Structure formats: structure tokens, C-alpha cells
Image: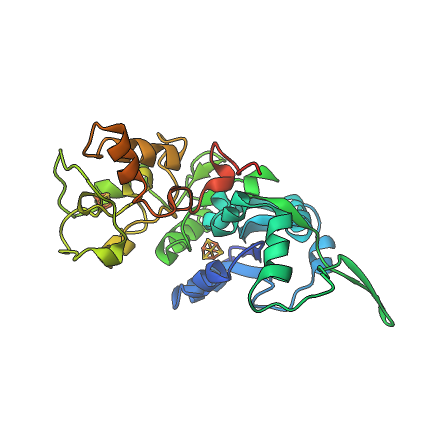
Length: 325
Ligand code: SF4
Ligand code: SF4
């Protein structure tokens, strides 16, 4: 009697406000893609295959086994697709830093929609728009009405819009971690409780990092990576370069640091840290080599774009959420 084949899982991949890197990272699994397609039928993946939104709308609720949703929620299209895919999916995964924490698009929360539109459509050096025309959400043409999504004032992480089952961090996630998590799902392995971060460790980058650390290094000036002659061995922070390692989960294989670049925090904070920016500010405060308030201020001013550095990937899901203008 022929062996009964295990039914394949139905897999969807979708992007919200994203750069495309997360979708590329799914393709980056190389030969493991054969393993993926052996276990899964791809039922929706706009960047790679010609499915339409109406195909998803026609699926019964819970029809898709796993959706990897990458990208933040920035506009009405992102939001309605997040809600639709939540309805149609058993296991919804926030895939990558943008879906996990708001990511790079979330830096827009340091500004607002009006200022961003003014900059993009009026003030930018390459723009000529004397009539001050902004993108319209509806525009009539002889063939009918053209529709564009409504851009929101706030960028949100996926779980600020719908319930998320798992968070797979990284910008983009390491493909090895994706394959591990995917195989755990298809083989029915014991998964952590819904709402957990998967494909990453609970310890910080510093726990994995091989660079040398001392206990009492004090800093008189912070520098950008190109301003130091990196010896390739000493902790970046101790060389005065901001490294988000103390406030960031391990799991990526410390790849940036192995490539002699400081950690930027894309894996998000470990479970014992609520706010990565606050953690970094307190870590850095202990390293400043002065008790004189004026000098302390001078040293702090040597940190280039502190808010953008400490919250590069996490502003929408941080305690701050946004800058109020
Ligand atoms: S997490 Fe990084 S790679 Fe993925 S969509 Fe966002 S910016 Fe791009
Ligand atoms: S701060 Fe950065 S360079 Fe220093 S130990 Fe931590 S991860 Fe390594």
C-alpha cells in the first residue's frame, strides 16, 4: 500500500511598508527552498507570484496555515491586508524588524505626515511643484477611478493592528533562523506560546560577541565608526562607538560585529529589557568620563542622532511611540 503523503501546509508571504529585503531573505534560503516547497504550497506572495487580493478574500477563514508578514503598517492598504490575512491565517508571523517593532519606516514617527509630504512634494531639491499638488487618494480618469491608499500619520508594528502569533526578528531575519522556524512549524514541533519571539535568543548580542571588554572603560568623546582605527578586537562601545549590543537579542550570529560594524539593534530587545533606547541611554550614562554637568553635556552632544540611533528599529513599539510635534 503506498505511503500516505503528509498534506502540505499553505504558506503566504506579504509585505506592508517594507523595503523588499525581507522577501528577498525568504528567497535567500537557496537550496532549502526545495525543502520549503516540499512541505508547503505558496498560496499568496505578491512580490514573487501573480496572486490578487481578491484570491485571498475568497479563501475561507483560517485557510492559510502560516503567513510571514513583513513590513510595518503605514497606510490603509497595509492595515486592511493585515486584518484580512489575520482572518485567513492560523499562524501569523511578524517577519522582520518592521513588522516586529515598526523598523526603519517607523523612524517617520519622529516627524508627521504633513511635514513628510511637504518635504517630499514641495521642499526637496529635485522637486518642482509650484501648484503644491499632493498625492490624491482618488482620481478620476476616463477609464474610471484610480485609488491610492491613505498614508497614516503614525507608523505601527503589526501587533499594534492585529494579534500576532510569533515574532521573527531581524533586518532581515537570518535565513537559517527562518528555515529552523519553518521546519518547527511543519513538523509540528513544540512551539513557544503565542506572542513569543522565535528564531532568536533571550541573551544579548554582548553575550555572543567575542570582542574584548573591560569593566571600567570611560569615554570622553563618542565617535562614528569611520572616525576610529578599529583594532578588530576591542568592544566598539569601549572605543567610543555606539553599539546597540547590550540592548539587543542575539540570534543573528553577531554578523555585523563579525563584519567589523557595530550592532544597530535590528533583533530588538531581550525579554528583560522593555525599551532598548532607555537601556542604551543608561548603559552610556555609566561610561561618561566626567562629573561636570557642562562637560557631560558636551560629551553627550558627540553622539550623532541619538534618538535615531537608539530607536532605529523600534520607535513605534517603544515607550515613546512617536515624537509629538
Ligand atoms: S525588516 Fe529590514 S529588510 Fe525587512 S522590510 Fe524592514 S527594512 Fe527591509
Ligand atoms: S557593545 Fe557591541 S562590540 Fe561591545 S561587546 Fe557588546 S556587542 Fe560586542
